Structure formats: C-alpha cells, structure tokens
Length: 295
Image 1: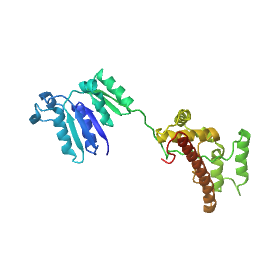
Image 2: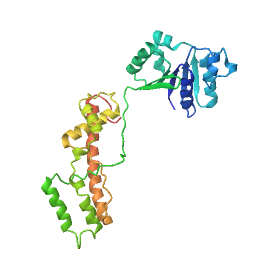
Image 3: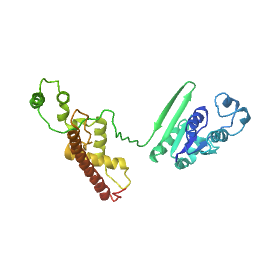
Image 4: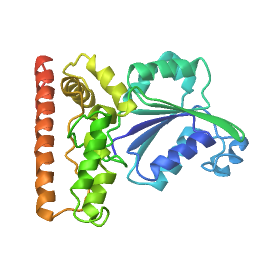
C-alpha cells in the first residue's frame, strides 16, 4: 500500500489504531510524540514494557510496530505535536493520512484547517476512560454503486394516463389463451405491467439527483476529478432526455429463449448508444477545459 500515515501522540488509543493498520500492511508511518515512557504508560499501553521506562514513547512504539510486520516502514519524531503544528505545520504535508489522538485546542483546529486546505484526510480521536469520540474529516468522498441491490426495471415503453394503464392490463388478459392464470407468462406480464410505464425520471434516487444538480453547475477544469466530470456529463444527459442513461438490464421473465435474447439485444444497443453519448460529452467537456479527453 502507498499510504503514508502520521500518528500524533502514541498513547493507548493511538497505538491500538496504528496496530490495526500496520498488521494488514499500511505502507509507512511516522509517530510524532514527545512523551517519555513512565510507569503510568505500563498500565494502559500494551506496546510499552518496564524495560522501556525513560525511553521516548515514539521510538518504543515504532519498534514494536515494526516487529509485527516487516513489510511496513516506520519512523518517529520526538517532538510535541502541538509545537509542530504551531511552528512547522507544513510537516504534515508529507503524509496522506493524519491520525490525531488526545490533541486539544487550539492545535486541533489549526491542524483540521490545514488538512482541509490541503485535502489530507484527518482522523481525530479522544478518549476519556470508557468514553471517547471519533471524528473523520475528508475533503471529498464519492461512491459509485454499479450494482444496486434492487435495480429499477427501466423499460421505457410508454407514459400512459390512468385509463390507458388499466386498458393495457385488460389487453394482456384478453390475449391469454384459455382461463387467465393458466399461462405463466401472461400472469407475469399482468402482475408487472406497471414496469412498462414507470417514468424513468421517477427512478432517479434523491441522492443521485443532489449529485447531478451540483455537477450541472460545476465548471470543469483539467484537474477536475474524473467522478465529477462524469457526473457533469450524466447531468447534461438527464437535462436532454429527462432520464438517466439506459442500463440495458431486462428483468427475468417466462419467455421463449430466442424472443428473450432478441429483447435483450434491443436494450443493450440502446444502453450502448446512451453510454457513447455520455462519453462524447465527457470528451467535449475536457477538450473545452483544455484537458486530455482520453485521460
């Protein structure tokens, strides 16, 4: 892993946190701590022993951590974290994750402000006996769920009124051979008729709508993250078509194999066309912004 982690204060909370990332292989870490191991550390910190008394705690914990995973590299700095923050806060720029434990004001606010400005994730922990709190500060975190648990069956066949919806269902019943219910495919069609005329725009989740609304007003630059460039392109697609790009997914149904495959191919072709349109918009946005359209 390429993570470079900075731990401020290697007390019991910080040491346990560091252990949990060193064991799976964090990459590299550095401990900034000015404490000298005392008898009080022996009762609450698993990573110091009586033989470590009067030694720098940062050095002792670093040594123990490196014994647990030889693939991890670690260093230490025997300085008070609050002094480092006050006099040389640019020191944290050499890390891509900062874990601050038992850090108090005004040092904590100064560190949080600096990490926010430099897009460095910050994890803040403070414990009081059996009580404590944890806060995570990250500048931006985006998630793409490519396989939602309950995919919306976006068939896009029609946009009927209420009377037409009922007439459509009755039409399905009338086409059935024999008593209704004997032919499974007609029963399925009747029970799932609503999927044929659900409006695509109604299937856009609120959280996705919020992302697209933000992206639609975003000025794309050569350094804009790929996620937001793609979101801007999808937002323009929604504005043009009043729907998300077609997924191409066709629900399982009782049907002849050849007719089902033919139906799948229709939706796959349209999904590919929608994908191409979004990709063309992405390339146009990056070209206009002076960036690499093929990045």
